[in-house]
Length: 110
Length: 115
Image (cartoon, rainbow over all chains, first blue to last red; front, side, top):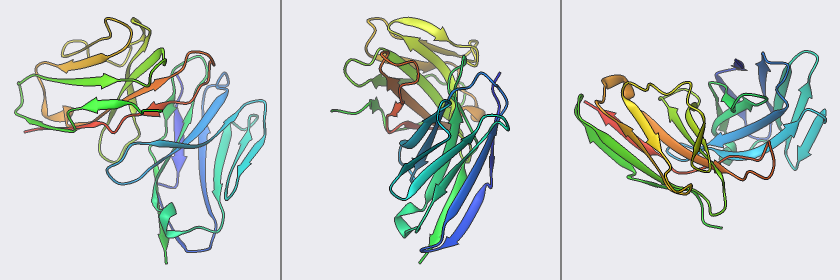
């Protein structure tokens, strides 16, 4: 089955700096890669997703890149703000149900 | 649109007791999921329904967990008897069936504490 590894587990950045979170997956059949943001005590919310026919997708300060050959994808947040502080989860889906990484706790220091 | 509704929000029980969680998905969403999220980890799928049929329950501990979605809308997840390691947040999610990779919409979850 699919296995998703996520790094780093914690990340601290200064406000205004960029943050990068990386994930690798094992199943070459995976073709859908969403990213979820979960604030403390709240539900995971989809922030961006990418499909395997696209190498990069951007939405304002958030971008995701996908390298199918290397089986890894990354989340990039630019000009970070304190409200970006949360746990971020990557996930991968192909022929099996969505599998999540273990999460990255991002802290943006004002 | 109204989101995924779950109840109760919190539940505290003793080990060996039973507990049930309820979920009402977004209207029109044919696919419903139950995830278990242990503190500090990502959500882990327990069971996936398509309408009222089970698509995947390979990670559901069937000796103690059961779930149903009788009319293809609401769903209940039951644990009987509960163990200490069942302490977690139980998240329900739904997605439309129109697209194979349609996004999951999560409910606020039920936080279960087993003492």
